[in-house]
Length: 160
Image 1 (cartoon, rainbow, N blue to C red):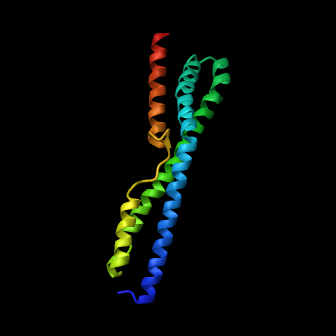
Image 2 (image 1 turned 180 degrees about the vertical axis):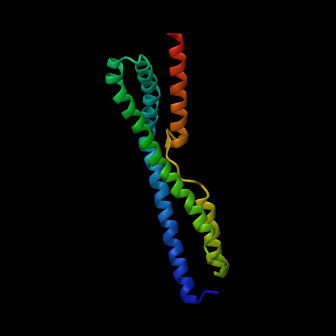
Image 3 (image 1 turned 60 degrees about the horizontal axis):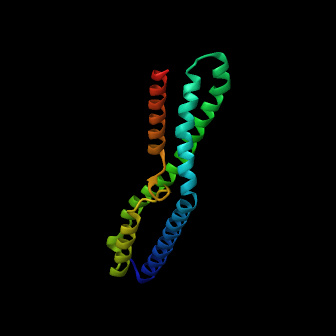
């Protein structure tokens, strides 16, 4: 069991952690609200432009590859970079769940146990950035855009 001094310190640290988690959650929600429409248009732009650039590159002429190859590569790289960075935010949020779960709550007094239980419930909601508050943005979204772009490319290529 913790001493009275240690319990006060634990209570203080728990409150600091809860406040910091609340700050991060509010900040992420504000980022999602502010940049949601931009993220949606960004991903739609990549969906359309990658399909068209792949179609241009499929001509396999030197001129087409020189003109559209670097641009296609840069757009792929931008999409992958942004998606991975956003995914890292969610991954770090998932680590927090385990960290709170492994807090030695069994040695605490009833008040701190309740605080840890409520905190554990709050961190169960993974922090994610969403486009327009609907679609979670990250590696899965990026993979679906790449998959769809390649499918459209194959379809348009077969129409030619």
